[in-house]
Image (tube, rainbow, N blue to C red):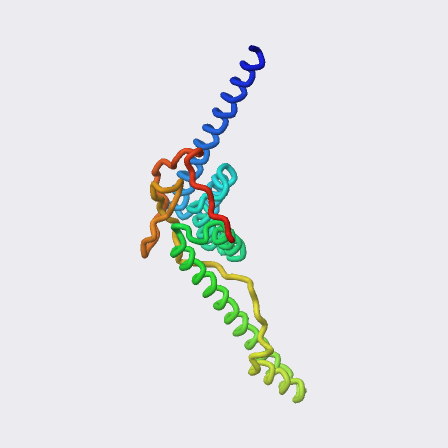
Length: 205
């Protein structure tokens, strides 16, 4: 009888803990949305990261984390979240939004590469002029040739500081699923489904 009572007490404690964790998850998502509306992207990301720690691998939360990282200029981190989303939810409801975000990340990467190339050109051209004034004609010629040769321009995977993506709004079909609209909107305050009824992520074959 005592053992049975202990089992019941333990089950009650586990249930209470799970309920409390889900409430904290809901609050973290709500706070994340509010911080996003205030354009406090770092604070918004902290709240969504907290939600992800409480209930991992919610597709809408992952998408919003990627968007906020991109808006904060942390493009490598955003790419890692996008890759994680695609691995878990290859056919997720946010697939179209993820594709748009991926295009944005690719563009920013290409833009940074171009800017670094322009900077390298200016530096080599300036060096060539300096060497010319020092009568170092071979050195000046080499610098000018290097400036004009695309093969000498450095490539980079470092990503710059802005993106136009935005945080999404949920659907009832999952805890925080975004609507596939042409312009995503901030996450709403809609109550998520309980932890026991959440859909499991799709395994990548």
